[in-house]
Length: 260
Image 1 (cartoon, rainbow, N blue to C red):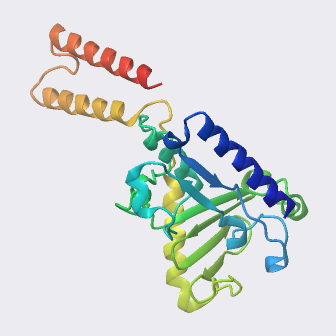
Image 2 (spheres, rainbow, N blue to C red):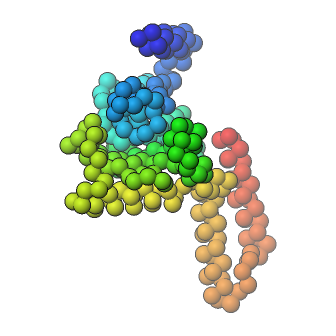
Image 3 (cartoon, rainbow, N blue to C red):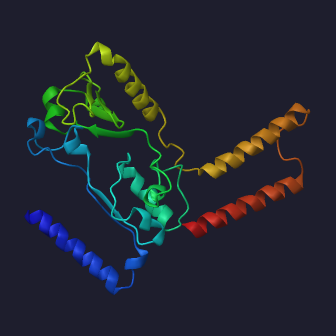
C-alpha cells in the first residue's frame, strides 16, 4: 500500500508539472508496468512464468486530443503488447515510423475508436539462465528459453527443455488445468505452436535499412531485369538515369536527417 501511494504521489508531481508548464494538453501519458507478480498465485512468487498474474500488466493511456474523446474512460479488451507503446508514441507525435526496427503496432486506431490493435495473438519470452530454474536444472545457458503465445481463449507456454503447457483461458481463467497432453486438444496445441514458430522466424532484422529503401531497391532491380531480358547489360541506362538516382538518394537522406 505504501508503494501504491508513492506511485500516486509521483504521478501527481508529473501531472502538476505538465499543467504548470502548459504541456498537459499536448502530452500523451502512458502508465504501465514491466511485469506482474505471483504473490502466491499458483503457489509461487516472483514473475518467471507466463500465467496472467505475471504477464498481464496495467496499461492506462491518457490521450489529450479530441479524437480520443470517444473512448475516454473506457476499458478495452484488445490484445496488445508492451512493444506497441513506442510505435504509438511515434504516431501520436507525428514522427516517421520505424517499421524495419520496431515490431509493435500503433494503438492510435484503438484509442480513437476506429479500429482494433491489429493483433490476434500476443507473445512473451524469457531467458531463465540466471534464475534458480536455470542453474538448478543444469540447462545450457544459450537455450534456457521459455516462450508464450496466447489468443483470446488459449495460451501455450513452450520450453526448450520441458514439456509445454496449454490452458483454456475461457473455461479455466485461473490457468490451473494443463491440457497439453489432452488428445482432444492436440489441434489447438499444434496451431499455437506453429503460430509461435512463425513469429520466431520473422523478427525485425533490417535494422540498418528502412523499408522504403528496400522497396525502391526492389523497383530498380525489376527495371534491371526488364532491361536484361531485352539484351542490355544490367546497370544505369545513361548518365541522366544516374543523375536521377543520385537526386533521389540525396532527397531521401535529407528527409531522413530532418526526421531524426
